[in-house]
Length: 209
Image 1 (cartoon, rainbow, N blue to C red):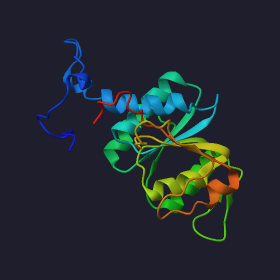
Image 2 (tube, helix red, strand yellow):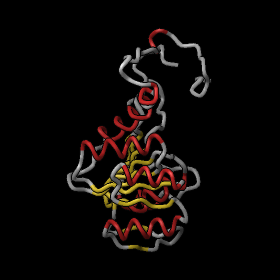
Image 3 (cartoon, one colour):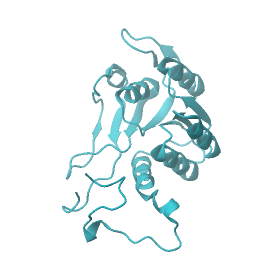
Image 4 (cartoon, rainbow, N blue to C red):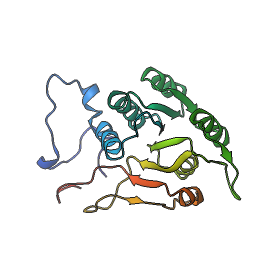
């Protein structure tokens, strides 16, 4: 147990960082999700004047939106939100379009219309965009259904970044042409050679636990 939701937890000195007095607790608590989103975006940045999708509007997703608006103001950002409060925050943070997470068919249709792609119906499953509609998908949810929607709206040779997904300690992260996700159809990512990347920072010392 990491103690992430506990009032107290044991920790080694190497894991601790002092919070300056000028930084309120309400801001300091975002250091973790902000760093995860920043790493994911700077590792796989969007193209100039591109279109990107932030899948999820929790702490990771809203931090990703804020980072994208600050570092890449010329990029149009769509956000998928589950709850009305998240959708309202996404609009306030500057999302160009905010979409509901269900039904997935309607979500794909709206994203394709927003991105200027065309819907194609494969032999199985949901339709896919070809030409694609979105240059980069930052998936902050990490479920099979979000992976499936993400690869179906990507442009050819687009990138899907799974933010907050842990990779093995000592590894260098995942970068592959296609990657299976339980319960999802990998066909779209194979047919268009999309890049799937894990966007969580890796531990830098052996004391990480």
